[in-house]
Length: 214
Image 1 (tube, rainbow, N blue to C red):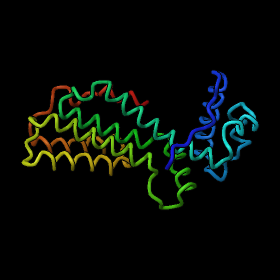
Image 2 (image 1 turned 60 degrees about the vertical axis):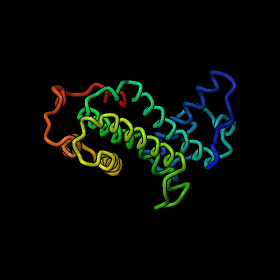
Image 3 (image 1 turned 90 degrees about the vertical axis):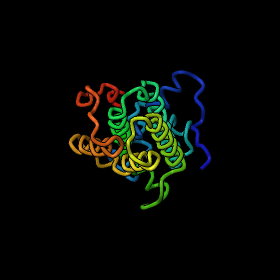
Image 4 (image 1 turned 30 degrees about the vertical axis):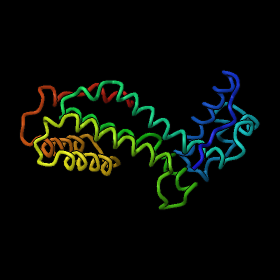
């Protein structure tokens, strides 16, 4: 899909208005769905006007296309921020736990609005957007690379296969995480990679890195 852009705001105040419209639209769509969200309701929630909305979008579908792209841009930026926080420097057990939490939290980014927008644009049961496919592929490739950089700690006879299993498991299960399941899953995946080697001393401690997604 060709990238969709709102009419570019030329002034700081105009950019703020666009941000308020986007935030209001995501909140209302997440709460009331696409059909239950009107342009007027978005404008009121944004503290703006219907005229300001139409100065930036041709209509509701134009807005949905824009939001569909921006949601995944947010996920992509958060992933970049996470990598910059030094995840790669963690021991392999903490790395697996960090990746697990990131996958789980990534799935929560505007999930209600994201799913409603996807159904409205592509129909029930339709596949993910081009942006979703592209960014999920990047996350998977980065995760694979980070884990294989710990190859010396992996005791599985086929490190590439073991890491692929870990990444695909995290991606598939990301929508079902709760704290207890997360820890159990991570423990199983760490054992899959490194066997029964002792975990790093701080493996059981809370990982502040996770807070980047809050």
